[in-house]
Length: 88
Image 1 (spheres, helix red, strand yellow):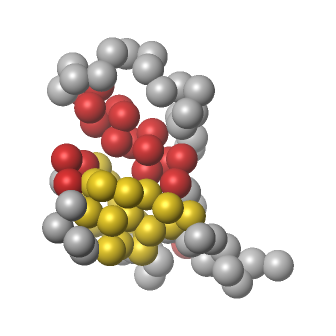
Image 2 (tube, one colour):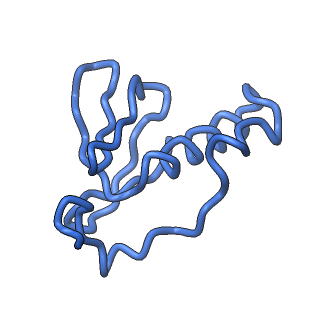
Image 3 (cartoon, helix red, strand yellow):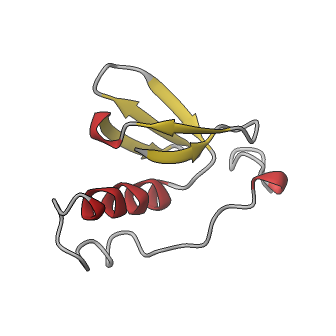
């Protein structure tokens, strides 16, 4: 399970095992294997990073794998978030 944030700033937990796609266009969309589409405040790289850390915690992905793909980033300050499509 990984913690993500809706655009309104409310946190929620998603089963990382159900993530099928993560896309930025320009906002971040997470598509689940169920077909459900989630719009989240985190960047695509942050969602991937959290998913990798989750898999590592289960010992399914070796430690250190994926650093070049999704470096660890600090938590997003959701109180000042604006969708990328509205940023100048």
